[in-house]
Every structure is written in C-alpha cells, then in structure tokens.
Figure (cartoon, rainbow, N blue to C red):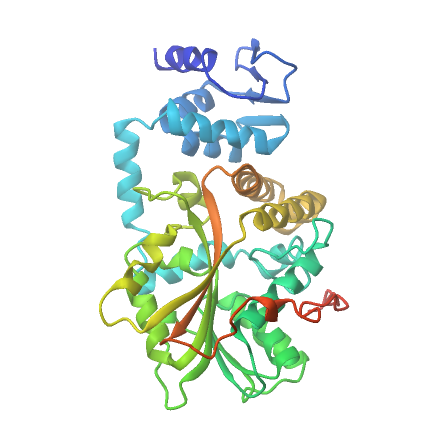
Length: 421
C-alpha cells in the first residue's frame, strides 16, 4: 500500500527534470515530458520501501549500501530528493521517533563534540588529501573568476579573510576550529602575525603540527592547541584578532551565545573577528537527517538571525560591521571537490578496501552533489562571512576599497605542497 502511494506521488510530481526509474522487478518508467536526464535503479524492494518510509535518510542509506544505483547527473537526483522530502514524502512517525532518539546521542557536549568531529574529520588525512587543495582547505573558496583553480580560489579566500581582519605584523590571532592548519600557517607566513589555533580533531592537529615543523616555525609564532573552543582562555595578552571559518555549524543550536561570549572574552577592545559559516534562509526544526547522521553528526546550519540574535542582547560588546553572502562560491568549490573525488575513487578503494571504500565514495557523492545542487540552485542554503568588532570601531575603513585596492588580493603564485606535506 505504502509503495503504491509513493509511486502514485511520483506520477504527479512537479519536477522540472525528466528521469527514469528502474524497479526491482525490472519494470521501468519515465517521469516527466522530455528525455530523462538521469536514471535511478532500485535493485531491491527494501531500497524502495526505505525511500518511501524514511525519505532522504532511507534513500541515502540504500544508495550507500549499493541497493540503489544512479546513472547520470547526481546533483539532479539529490534535487529530486529535496523536492520529495519537502513536499510529499515525510518520514513515518515511527522513523521520526527513532531518529529523534538517535540525535540525543550526538549532542554537542564536550565529549559529544569530540566524537562528532572525529566521526568525520578523522577518516584519515590521506583521504582528504586526495580531493582537497594542497593547503587542505575544507571550506568555501573565493572565486575572483569562475575559471580559477581550486588552489587559487582557496588562496583568494585566505587572503580575503586576512584583509577583512586588517592583519598587522606582530598581532596575536586566535582561531577557533583551525582544521588542518592552512589558514593559520598562511597568516603567519604571509602577514607576520602570531596565531594560536584550537581544534578537537586529533588527526588534523597532528597534520598541522607536522607541517609547522617542516616549515621551521616555532611555537612562539604558531601554536596548534588540541582543545575545545569553549576552553579558549582569557589571557593577559588578549588577542588582537579572532577568526573562525566554518566551525559554527558544529557548535550546535543553542550554543551561539556561548560562542559570542568566548569571542568577547578573548578579543581586545577594538579588535576584529571574522566568522564564516554555512547558513540557511529559514529556521528549521532539525538538520538534514541523512547529513546529520552520516556526514556531520550534531551539526546545524543557523540562519543569520539565529546566529546574531545573542549580539542583540543588552550588554553584548560585539558589533556586526560587515556581512557577505558567498553562496555561489561554495557551489563552485564543491564542484572541484566532486571532480577530484571521482578522479581518485580507485585510490580511495585501495585505502579502505573495496566494500568500505565504495561506501565512503557513495556517501561523499551524496554530500557533495547535494551541496552543489543546493548552493548552485539557491535551494535555501547560504554561506556568510561576518565581520565583528569588539566595541564600536570608528577607525575602521569607511568603504570596502581596502580589500581590493592596488590588487590587495593579487594573483600570487599558487604553490602546491608536495605529497609529503
């Protein structure tokens, strides 16, 4: 009965791309008026049932296990999934309850955050090195031209962040969520500042420290600290600048006031902070279920209002001074990641074994294709760079000209680290 209802819903689906479905019994059907752009092959009845009872969560799990195959544009498939989930295919009550109970195990307590981060970022440094840029930037690049390489776009992004921070030699910068350390290293080498970066991923911190040693940079200039951002201490030499690039998604809903308190506590009066985060157009009751369970446990993308609401509370010293939406830059970034993931699929299978490697490839295909579809088609997910000042800053530049005057983001030579790095 449930599957018959699901198939009937496909018949009247208002979707702008035609597609073909092959069912477990070998029967096939085309939905839409034109030539199909992609084909979904349900290889088992269970995969069909999971799709119609657990929506995108069930479809994603069936694809990861190999019970569904896709031919054609994966981003179109994910767009179809979004359309179904948001209109005609809610999860059943039983599966909603089970998922809600699962979420409780992924709350962002101190220990929970460490488990959540390790589940994604500690897959292995070698895995991410296969498809990220040479500086291991796992965040949105900045494309001064759509033809920029991934390396160039990530270099542009790092320089843009540094210009927005108005870095000056000798300043102390604190970074919350420093990833594999590329931005911190760039700030030290190119702008002459001191950086203290915090991260709870053991593999990322180990990689960052090893690269620091290869460049011969002492801890008096660069320090990677294996600790939670909530433990960043207020020191006698409060930092001049503060930066956090796409860590907020992992903080979890309800923790934004605590994050802003950390910034206000460790940043000097008059200091600047740049916060970059993936956002959404409208608040949601929960994160995307498949993504939260299988890719980013415990994540939530806040709306701009949700994130800055604590700054409107009486007594907050932080002032938003600049907001930039970089939505389409992320679509371009994800497309590069997708291409590199596909090009290295064989190597990934060698790393993890055929079965586990294929599951990881399929998981990241859904994730990256979903990102490209969402950011590329404006389906509701955004990406902001937000500049904050600790107190009113009358000395700030009156315009944004300083970001690009005299080619502030000039085309520097892109140096790709060696495989050893």
